[in-house]
Length: 405
Ligand code: NAD
Ligand code: USQ
Image 1: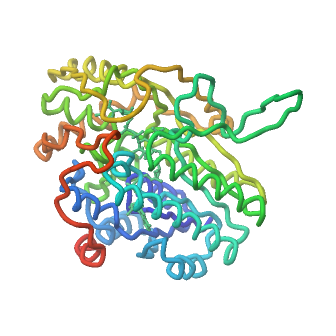
Image 2 (image 1 turned 45 degrees about the vertical axis):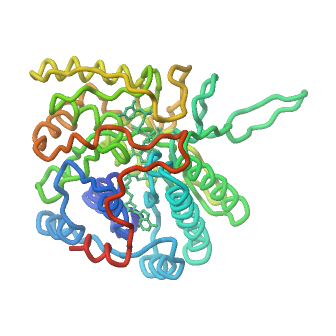
Image 3 (image 1 turned 30 degrees about the vertical axis):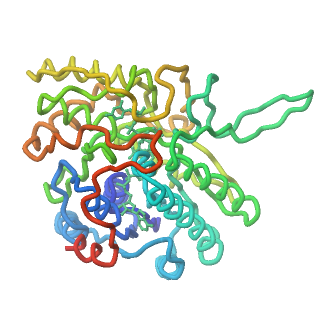
């Protein structure tokens, strides 16, 4: 298949592009490198020393003989996007190209607006481009489990059948997102549902849980292919942060009671899920929703697991409970369904299998690059204008040159 990976220079996108390329698909990466600019803006960097996209792609080509085409630009720019879709003519488009950090979207008005414009306009442009230029193409869109929030009932995969005043209907599952970022995903889902209905597009919305790990067969082929590992207070996700903290003997930062329960999956399962979904496209006019995660844990369970496993590796791990900077339930019911991808053939990698090799050992290997000042949370949900340290103003026209190398 011809598969366009929007956001292919990012964490999930890079691993997916290489995986699908290794399976023989023709891949194009579309990215504007804004993720690298956000690091520059916040004064943070990935724990792992990632190369520029041209350098990474050259390593891939030399190792495998496979070429991946690149289109550098912003998908909120419709002319750029339309020219790209029309030039590449994809069978499937995997859309990762959004601002994905909840804390980033909660810094202040500017960052909230940026997040929603970037995400909602990018996706809306994409829907119009598909309709106009590739109407049979399958849109594989990354949503998030956080769209549902933490209701006191079981979470279904996208839809729930409700009986009300003697009548019955299958309706979208209620959404209670917990940040302006998570809200942007809900807005996207509504726009995609509507476009499928009115134009007969085909789309799969993947409500993905928190992804962990850096190791896939392809990125470990060479140091030059290494993937991101973010541990800072804005882009670092909880498991990465805990492993980086454990690696240098800093107490693990559990927010509040730590009863916050989320769905998690190994990056090896992210790439496999995308393959499964591309191989089993939605029908014309169909809007499908799959919950993409494999196991659920509370934040405190993760901290205790890392303490135990880290202890076996000789690390001295302590657990701290910080006041929760977010507005979220600190203990709650959580039972989210996630069987549709397994029904299509996903064989999950469990955390017990990936924790040491894909996380703790990577954190130990690069621990000299860890900046401990990145652990304290600096973005509080209750504050409209957080004074998080902004090191560099975001100036895309200058920065894009810088990050391209
Ligand atoms: P990432 O930030 O590492 O990658 C996103 C990529 O998209 C970056 O390379 C960035 O430069 C690019 N991008 C962003 N806006 C763009 C635009 N307007 N035009 C062109 N390129 C643009 O993020 P990730 O962790 O790989 O996440 C990918 C997707 O998966 C996101 O949509 C995210 O919401 C979703 N997701 C991620 C996780 C996770 O744990 N990482 C979990 C659930 C869902
Ligand atoms: N948390 C801590 N301590 C920390 C960091 C986080 O206790 O040091 C807690 C948070 O308060 C939250 C939970 O851990 O309750 C998860 O936070 P996170 O930063 O790991 O993940 P989140 O903000 O939910 O976002 C991440 C990705 C996002 C994706 C989402 C999937 O950044 O792109 O959409 O996971 S989900 O959580 O299912 O919505």
